[in-house]
Length: 276
Length: 251
Image 1 (cartoon, chains in turn purple, red):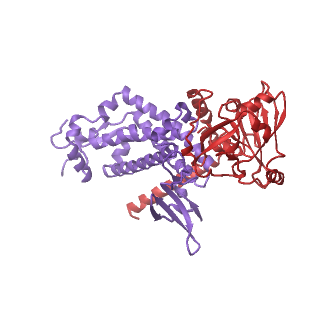
Image 2: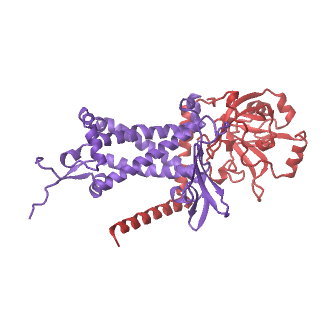
Image 3: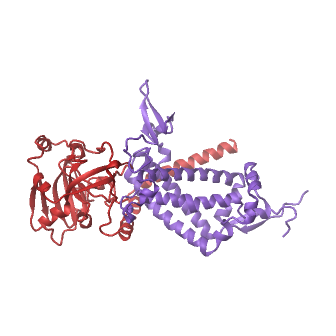
């Protein structure tokens, strides 16, 4: 009989980080789904100061009547056109087939209800901002930002091996799992200090009153409709990050990862030569 | 049942019940109120960051949208209005009353004879689109200076000609005195150098440039100064506000 693998639990995440993680997860999900409800009220994106400049929309979701009388969903990106029936443009909501950009399962509320979508969006925007401000402060005060998230010289030297490990789905084990690797650090920094602040700023840029804080500042990001487009793109990148994040959580030990974000404890199985 | 199928079923059941729970919350009486509790925060933050007369951006002629989109009512379904429109609004008179020392009526020519302001501004609809147009009109402050609001007046209510539904509810809106006296708040009678078209709100529509389009009432017939709008129609200060939209539309 082989001996059971010796292992120990270590406190990976402080209670503050765990609470802020889950508050952020709830807020971002509510913001995303209510955001799609808001988008559905005018499902087109433009580049510039206004929507009506003489140029076509850069991105649009619509529906058109097919020869057989049924509707088909059409998504346009630049000059390209895709049929996206069932998901974008035309989709099922309960027992009805509806003409709507994003489907009912992706929006809050499920039915078309712009006023309520806005309520959700602005409430969770405040929760997100207050939580995010706490996170940034916490990161500075506890030095978590410097000690755990800023890439070290050693991280940069391991760039290629880390990329190779990720592509081959090889995950750090033993003591190495106690630290974030370079790609994790860059992903977390990119999301928390670039994508989310950009999302917030582009959201503020869409507010006609906030624009008057410094009249004309919205031109710096290409105008209000560009800000709306960037808001949408940043949200799409965030969805992409979340999908990769969930994938990595699942394949690198789903229960261990979940436990570390709920109770804080992460199980380490020391590797040969790593006796404690 | 395989583990994978079980997990997939569990995930989809969880997702469905989450969506149902969100929809139940939206239809409850307390949750929308909780969500709406941030409206004063939005307004307070914006007012704290800006001066009373912070200016909305003004644009160049080259930014003007080829056609200014008409949204909502394009032709009020009202015989009296249509008669006036047929006559070029020669019989139209703007009633200004309520908490004022000198209630008055103004014809379109009288408004046109007052000081005017022209501004090229961006119109942001709550739906998400924007259009840029050149507006010329009488500053609301100019009209108010003639009727002299009393110190009790807190809001300016715009009563409009367009019935919005079979019940005959007409469009209305309200703004506070700060917006009422803002230099860019005008009663516009021209769009892009021509008489304001019926689809954009003839004979006058108000411009409230720091807020969304639904605040900018079209087809204005009467301006009433009040200290409280809870007794008017649904009591929330506007047609769309009565249907769940925020009174503060600066966001």
